[in-house]
Amino acid sequence: MDKFEKYFGLVDSDFDSPILVDNHDFEIQFKHLETMILIRFTENLLAEKRKIGKIGGPIHLAAGQEAIAVGISSVLTKKDYVFSAHRSHAHLLALDPNPYGLFAEVLGRSTGLSKGFGGSMHLWNGKSGFSGSVPIVSGTIPLAVGTGLASKLRGSESIGVAYFGDGAMEEGVVHESLNLASKLEIPILFVCENNLFSSHLHINERQPSNFNARFAIAHQIESRVVDGNNVKSVANNAQELVSQIRNTRRPAFLEAFTYRLYGHVDWREDIDVGVGRSSEDLNKWKSRDPIKRLKKALDGNAEFVEKLAQIEQDIKIRIVQDWEKAESDPFPSDSELISNVLFSDVRDQNVI
Image 1 (tube, one colour):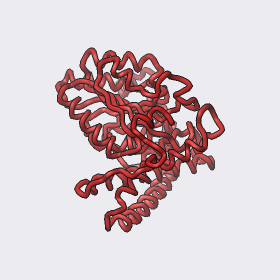
Image 2: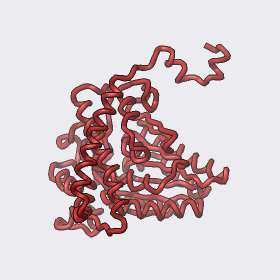
Image 3: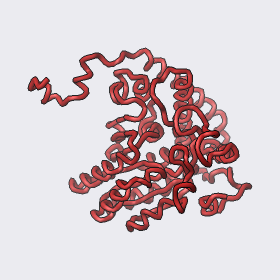
Image 4: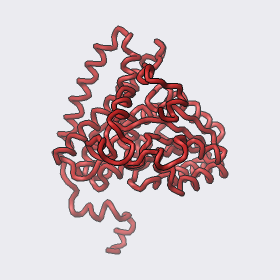
């Protein structure tokens, strides 16, 4: 049994136990479920299209980790600044559940979120607060710190949010960011999605402890450790931390334990790749699927089954339509190689 399982008091008999949902928050949790299903269906389609060669570049999927993005996004505003890394689809869609722009981007179409120039790992959606993702591990964390500092200097209630994995904790800039945020009292939420793997290497092979919140403690930053496959727990803890950040203008750190159902990249499960990823562990985590657990929790509601079936059907139809629409969109024109790279004032001066 891993150390984190001991932390949550989990044993095999309750490893896939349902989430506790009261009648008064049924609608909230059902909305969370709907968003998680949309993200899962979107990524499953991306995996399928990548496998058959419809998508040219690599895709890093977050299937199995949706509860973290959905729970946290539910307590943010469009004025917050959210940054992510290479595995960012869930963060993007939790803020704005519209896969069309993502589909167009991974297909290299001019209607994509980054005008077809970024692909799966260079995404941006300013209207939702998604301020950018890059494939450089930990590369956006200092940017999130910077937006938090800018918000503080402006007297704004906006906060920075930085999503990253447990592997990023082994990058120096993360610790520099934690130190600066603590020392300057910057309003930012650090979110460590601890899926136990850095690419193909298990955390037990890399670190003396499974818990990354210890680094927040070292920098005197308020921290929480949560079950990342329980969307209700993620949302409740995120709400408390985000409220605290807005009120005190100080940083906070949320570590969420989870597991990705796909391998490091593309559609494969990576059972035979790397160190520490076994079919036994994967099957155990599949039993803790955040969508499956929330479905169990909501199953007692009389309207649930019929309502869920209709929503799942509607989402599947919508996703296929969005993909087909994106696939028929045009590629960027030759002129966009310049217009989408250089500032307009530079172009106007006929520098090139």
